[in-house]
Length: 255
Image (cartoon, rainbow, N blue to C red; front, side):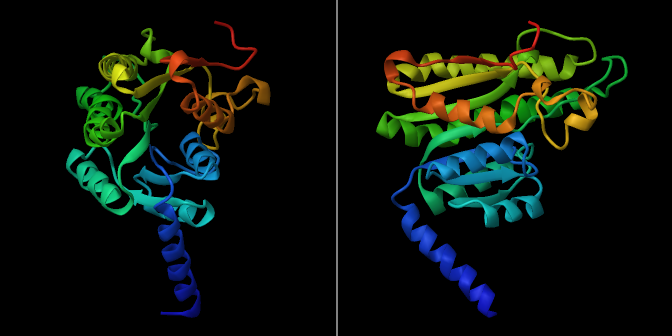
């Protein structure tokens, strides 16, 4: 092993020893730097949580792992439920029970229902809703033991109303919201805070800005860092004033 390799190994060993004193936050959908998932992971790592980052792109994840303190890459395509379960077991073995679960990974098919392959509806459902179910089933028991934990889900206005050309995505996000609300109603009285974030905005990410509204100024977009901050504030809410439905939109958004 090279000198730099030895140093990296020693650094990770020290971090893991210190990790035992920190709480675990699992984040899905951790994409490119400056995107929503990456900013969520970065923000919670800065607040001294261990962050287990889940996404398909292993190269990107390991790059972020080097940049963010307390953060660990767990490459996984969450549409593969078997692989997701294996990944969650590995995370638990390495870091213990999760205190925070943030399901941020989306699957979105756009187009007329006459043109889209019906298989894509099932793919959207598997990532947006089925994966949430399995994520919760694997992490919730540890939270219940302590009667303390947080489950945060990234949603949008598609979860509240249908829209032309977004039928597959909207229907699966609506089911995601209802599943999250059902979990909140069942386990809220047992100390588990569930919050669903309805983001009524185009999000300013390197991937979406050129695709959605390239001609708009900065005020038009929701900033990923600001979304992460609002999620963190929700975790800090007193039990007497928990939120479930958290709506976020830019000040100029017409609604």
